[in-house]
Image (cartoon, rainbow, N blue to C red; front, top):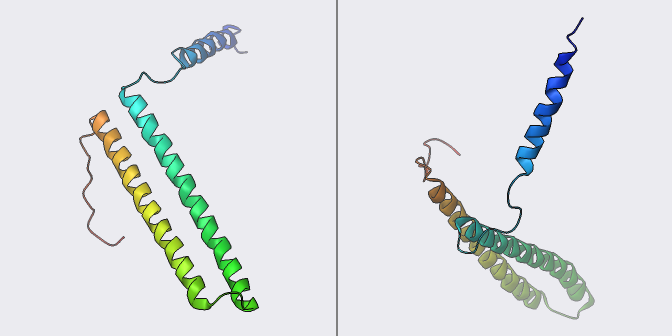
Length: 127
């Protein structure tokens, strides 16, 4: 037969744990703090990712529209290919900027944390 006290010690422990998780300031990070800077960088990365997605969707739409224009004789293949090349160049530039921002954020977070294993060296072997 289980002891009746067994059930009663768990409830207060869970209550203390739940309160411990909810204590603290839930507002934004103070201006100029590392957390605020990381948050601003993360917001910039999110905006860049959204721009990249929008540009990729535009390229997909342009592809379908270009096929119809060429088939209807409203445009030439060369003109439509040039439009796609320009949009692809924009896509590549946005992707490169997003990659740079993400690498900068990652480096800053590791530096702020004092990570002794950063930057990591390439591991030899196939990837």
